[in-house]
Image (cartoon, rainbow, N blue to C red; front, side):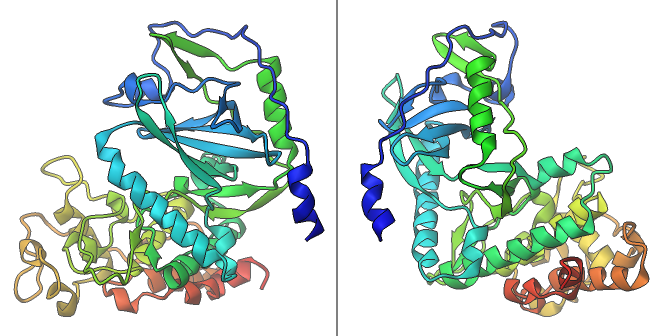
Length: 414
C-alpha cells in the first residue's frame, strides 16, 4: 500500500536526447515496410526516434513492422518503464478490426483480475489512444509490455530449423495455460496461433532496454526520408538477462465465444485451418487446439503437416487441404460432414472424398515423425499430437487437459 501511495511522487524520467547525425539510406532503395505489397506511405504514422507521443511515451527505436502497423520501443516517462508501442496504419478497413481487438484486450484485462495462472501467458494491454498524423488522420496506438524474440525467430536461430524437446515443452506448457485462460475465463478463441505470435517475456528492469537506448544514442539507426517522412531500419533488442515465460500475442483475429452467435466464418492461417473451418461447420475454441497441433509439428518436425498446395492451380485450395487430411487421418466422420455448409463440395453423401483430385498416399504420423530417437518418447509425442489432431472438435483435448500431457511433463522434468 505504501508503495502505491508513493508512486505518484516519483520524479518522471527526463526525455533522452538523440543525435540528428543519422546514417541515411538512398532514396531509391526500398526498406522495411516499403517492401510490403500495396504499401502506401500516407497510411503509416511517421514516427520519429526521440519524439514524445501522447505527452508520455518517448520513442527509442524501431522493433518491427508489418502490413498494418509498426512497433517501437519507448520510455514511459511517467511510470519510468519501457513499453512497446504498436502504431496502426490509417485505413477504412481497419476501423472495426481495431475496435474488436480493443474489446478483446478489455475482456482479457477484466478476466485477469480473477487470478487464473494462464493470464501471464497472454499479452496484456497497458494503454490505448489515438494519435493524429500530419494529414489529420487518426492512428490507433496500443501500449504493451515489451517482449523479446518470437518462437519463429528462435526457430531461425537454430541451424536445423527445429526446436529442442525441452524448449518446445516450456512453450507448450505456457501456451496451453494461456489458452485455458482465454477459453474458460475470457470466452475467446484466438484463431491465429503461429510461431511469430508467441514471444518471450522480459523482466521489466532488464539491461537489454538500456543497452538498446545506448546503442541508439551512440550509433543511430539508419533511416531514409521520403516526402518529409522518415522510415527507420529495425534495431534488434539484445538478448535479455531476465528472460521470462512465452506470451501469446496479437488478438486482431480473436473471436468472442458463447455470445449467442454461431461461428462459421473462415479463420486461421491457411495451413493451420481446422477441418470444420474449411467445410463451414460451426466452430468453437477447439479450432485453437487443432491450430496448435499443426504449428507444433511444423516447429518440431521441420515441415508442415498440410500444405494445401493444389496440383492444378499451384496455390492453396481447400480441396487439396482436405485430401491431405484424409490421407493422414482417414475419412471424416459423417456427423462432422452433416454440419458443414460446404461438405457437399468435397464429399459424397456416403462420406467419400469426391473432389476432382487424387488423395495423396496414406502416411501416418508414425511414418512422418523424424525427430525423436527413443521409442517411448516418440510414442508419447505422437499421443500428444493425436489429442489435438482429431476430425471431430469435441474429441480434441482441452487446453487445460493438455497442460498436464505426459510428454510435456516429462520434458519439463515433471
